[in-house]
Amino acid sequence: MTVKNITFSQATLEAMDEEMSRDERVFVMGEDIARQGGIFGQFRGLPDKFGLDRVRDTPISETAIIGSAVGAALAGMRPVADMHFADFIGVCMDEVFNQMAKVYYMFGAQKSVPLVLRAPDGIINQAAAQHSQTVEAWFAHIPGLKVVIPSNPADAKGLLKAAIRDENPVIYFEHKGLFPMKGDVPEGEHLVEIGKARIDREGKDVTLVSYSMMMHHAAKAADRLAAEGVSVELIDLRSISPWDKETVLKSVAKTGRLCVAQEAVKQGGFAAEVVATICEEGLEYLDAPVARVGAPFSPVPFARPLEQAYKVSADTIYDAVRKIL
Image (cartoon, rainbow, N blue to C red; front, side):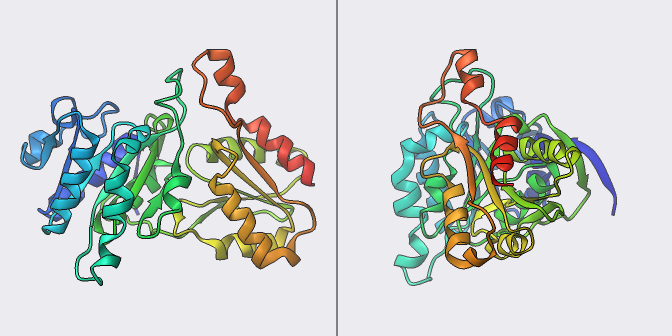
């Protein structure tokens, strides 16, 4: 397998290019994606290759973007709608959870909505409370949606291609801090199964589960623990709806301990779903209380010192794991 070292942003651009070349029904729409290639460069060059009919700038109206994308999907197209910032999905929630998520069920499987909603999320440098949120748990709670959250360039490409080919609506969260990160990405056809976790490293003392940007902090915590003789099994969920509970259960059965880390607010986050499932279906495996790591129950602060104090770090994860060892 031939690989090349490219950024997360370039990996998603490669996925879009390949899927638009493969299937003429695939098109992309959103604010400023044709004129400036997206604010993170993830659509740069697509208008020159595919034209403005398939790379469409839209008005500044999230409701119009998703409403139009749902209509296009119902009419037989395969739209990829860019949301600029995941925070803005709140503007078009009716289209998301009352329309695109429910059409297949309410019409007796006669129509599907093959739509991908790309949603850049997460904390970056002082973007403040309305441009920094991680809201994936909202959508994992909605039947009819798939939710994927890659943590590295290879998965960014493979999951985006799989999402575009899926017959169901998929929300594709891509952390803004990951866009410049580089990694090895397979060239050509590369698909990652939606709903299948990846064991980043094997271990025997504790299971550490995470996803998205938080995987990189979890890896640093695992390195620190390894230096102290603690063997961490690190699991990247990659998808949270559906999510791979079998892989996590099997790991906890081996290690007897579980810590789940997320960037989002701890209260009501997806980590709670993982923990609850393990307690329901694998309580006999646990040799210690479980640990959850998440942000304080507060909007994301703007002030730099407060933002740094608010963010979940490798140290936060390390401390949580140490408590259950």
